[in-house]
Image (cartoon, rainbow, N blue to C red):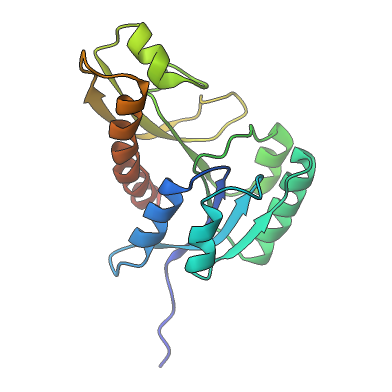
Length: 188
């Protein structure tokens, strides 16, 4: 008797190096994982993360021109591959309200700050300049307003006096890898 695969199907949207994508792929191969990565979409043909999709024989697509084309094709592919959840992992575009209404499945994002603090870009520099004692990362549901969706999980770390934006970014990236998996397992 053939065993049915009960793992949830995930699409990951990326724009850059893909360290969160790699981490999700690596975890998805474990027996205990309740998800698999079935689709990778990028808005940048030079996104380094695309190599992880290729290496792991995951379908990958790039739509660089217009966000509207990216979203149209993403919706088509999500339906075609029967995707259950979309993960934004370093995807540097803001999805439109139209896409979010049409997608009909959860879209989650990882953000390098303790939301609702420090929405948007340059969070590490802003946290240091504001003399915050802690920073971290947040995995949240994506809604129309930027970085405002319901929080799924957060991880925090102390900001040391010797920290600069680069050292803080490295420490938070390690937290992101744990947080994204924890959040996915939590909502599945």
